[in-house]
Image (cartoon, rainbow, N blue to C red; front, side):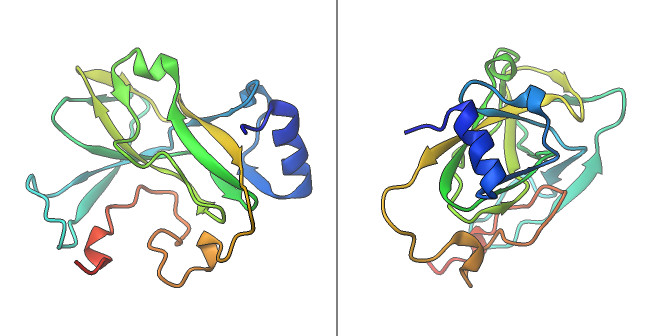
Length: 178
């Protein structure tokens, strides 16, 4: 079951959902719009290795915007810091973003209960497109959880994305044993 706008506000009042900064104008009927933060990153190497720590280069989006190009994976970050203590957050692209040919996540649209951070975006595009810091980029949808949670994400000792950040975070796949 997806939370409605009124239910999202109730959960914010209870402290089970935190969105910073919060703007009531961004609250949709059953979602909350999030915005692109000011930092992007790209991988330093063209060939990535799942067993290695692949380094990234961070850069700030200039005021005049930044042109994304097809064939490059860009890591972005949401302006909003979020915490979700009783629901499953899903990040989806806005239809207006998709209609510009921008995908905001390759596979990682679902968060875990207990996720407390900004969201790293896995951005790709169908054709060159200029983007801007602060532009609406996606929407968070919250789902009810059935059953009790054994271990919240922010309490897991092996959670790879718990460090609070305002910059995109590279893949931590290399920390897995395989």
